[in-house]
Length: 108
Length: 119
Image (cartoon, rainbow over all chains, first blue to last red; front, side, top):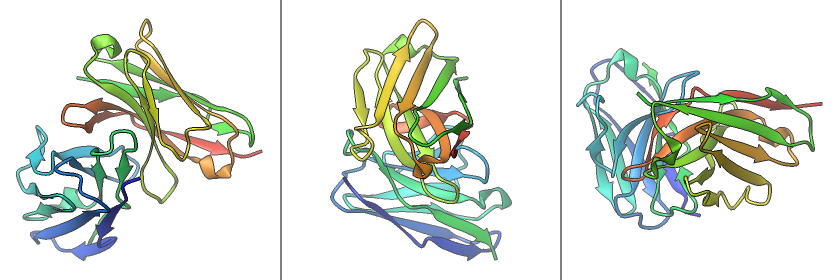
């Protein structure tokens, strides 16, 4: 299986801060990388697909970059509704889809 | 708008089979464009992909669960189902159904259903 490692596992930030989350794959996954946001008690929500494409309806403060093994999710100006847990997910290995361990974004 | 809804028992005894159904509305499972998937999440932990099914009935399963998982589809009811056999406490989790497709992403999810394995 392709292992996905996210860092940090948690972070504290203030409203308006720029936040960057990293996801590293154990082997090259080209651009087959998606990002999801999960608020407590809710299902994950797709934010970014194909490493850098913004899902329809998602605010433009969210952006993704990277290819190969290293990827980032950036929130340009953190808003109150952005406090949540974020997961990356690879779909290069279509027979064994895997998620990262998650990054919890908390209020400082 | 595509909607998915999980249903099934919230409590399953150890060694028995966990059975869940996902009912899809706003889209046809028979459309042939998407895979229909199950994902689970133990309390306080991350997401684990269980498996998926195509409208043709073709399936792919997580290798770590493959020996215990069966996913099936009922196109007449626009539903797909999960069976997980020989469950233990480690299978206690919130189970989600989701649509997988496009550029290989999960774009619509059910709200999730908690299944507890306990005697």
